[in-house]
Image (tube, rainbow, N blue to C red; front, side):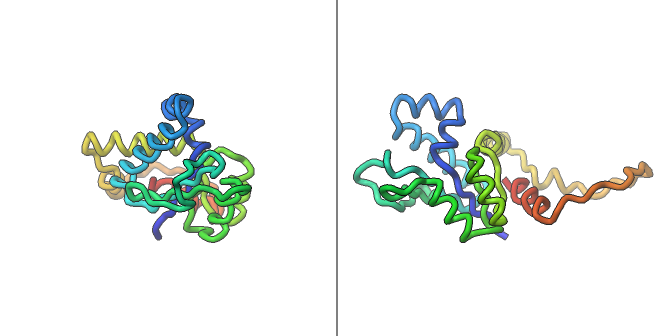
Length: 175
């Protein structure tokens, strides 16, 4: 099952120390830096990524939907919030979506629709780690699957997560 990562663009920019500095200088610098970072991540992980921005601060020459470096970029229409666009996408994608935002309203709505959610700072750490691993040439997938190691140690009964939480954890592991 492929993952569609839907990102609350300004939320991620303003939660990030590095991107926020660029955003304060010029809003376009912040957007471009985020898209560059996501383009590198997309080359490594190949997930479908959509970034949603509020259209009120969009450049006047942009369309409402665009593709930059393989990343789908959407600006909300006049009078519409990016939150509404993200909620609509979460409702359409449901289990296929992973929503990146620290906005509790979006997180609650998306999880009620069956989408997995992750906070912006945690997602930023994940993409930074993926980039670091790629630069170092470390493949986490091959290191994870070392096989079963026989042992006599007993772990005891464990509480099993709900089906929804297990699906969400699987999506986040794929990041």
